[in-house]
Image (tube, rainbow, N blue to C red; front, top):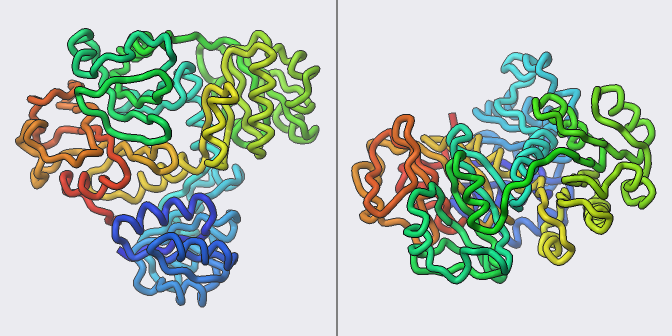
Length: 458
C-alpha cells in the first residue's frame, strides 16, 4: 500500500517505522529538512520537504495514487487542510488527522468531518487518548502499564517484580500448576532492557518487568500473586490543568466512587478556566514544584499524584517531590522516550507515553481485516492485537501447540462466544474466535499472516 505521513515528529516517525517495516510504500512530508533527512537515513521511506497542506508538495509525495494519508503535523489547521486537499484534488480514499484543540472535538460539531464538509475519516485526539490512558493507570495503581481488551473482560497488566514477590525463581509452567484456577498468563518479560516472549520453563527474577493478561475478575488476585496487592484510590492530586489534566478531572467527577481530587495549575487564567468547568475538584493556582503548594494540596496523604504538564522535566521533578512528601504513588507524563529508563531509579511508579498511545490509536484505525484492537508496547517494542479468526486463517481448526507461531509471539486469551478461555497447548482455535496475541514488533508480519490480516483500507 502507498501511504503518505505528514509530520516527521515523534508520532509520524513511529508510524513510518511501523508501516515501512511491513513493506509498505511510505513517504514522509515535513517542512523541517533535518527531520526528513533523519527519517530517510534511518527508515526505508521516501522524504519530501515542504508544507503538507500545499497541493504541489502532496503531488511530489505521490498523492495521486496514495491509498492513505495520515496528517500528524503539530498544527490542527494544517492537518485539516491537508485532508481536504488530499480529498478534493487527489481523491485519496482514506484520511486520518490528529487534532489537539478541544474546540474541534466537541461532539456537537461532529458533522464538520463529513465528506461534503471536511472529509476526514478518522479524527485522533492525543489529549483524549492520554487522558484515557491516565485513568486506566489510576484504575490499577500497582502496575506501570494497563490496557483493556475484549470489551473490558481481559486486562493487560505491566508489573514491576520486587525482591519480595512470591512468584520469583519459579518456572512459569509450575506457577500455572500452583494456581490452576487463576485466569492469567505471562506473555512478555523485559529483563535488563530487552523484551522477550517467555517459554514455559523460564523463571522470573527481581527487577523484571512483566506483561500479564488477566481475566477482569482475576486482576486483584493476579496482582497479589505477583506481590502487588490492589490499593484503593480516594485522594488524587493532578499537576497541570491542560487538556489532559482537565479531561482526567472531569472524568473523575463523573465517576460514582467520588474520588477527591485537587488540581494544580501554574497559569492563573488556565486555573480559572479549569475551575469554571469543574464542580467538585479543588483548583489551586501555583507552581506544582513548590513544596508549600504541594503541602497545601495535602500531597502527603494523596493516594496518587498525576503530573501531566506539557514539560517532561517538570512532570518528573513534580513526581519526585510528591513521593518525597509522602504520596503513595506518582505517575508522570513523559514524551521523551530516553527519559523512561530513569523512572525506576527516581522512584516514579508509572509513566504515560503520549507517543505510544497515539501510535496505538492510529494503527488501530488502519489495520483492516479482522483486527479489532491494537496496543503498542514500550518504544514500539511489541504489539498486542485483538483479532477475529477467519475461516481462511492457518490457525482455524488447530490446537495452539500445532500452530507455528514465531518465537516472539504468544496467545494471551481466547473468546469463544461469550466465554473467555485462558489458552493452553491443547486449546483449539476455531473460526469466529477472538484471540489476543502478544507479538514482538519483528514478528508482527508473521502473526498477521497467521490471521490472514494485512494492512488495507476501507
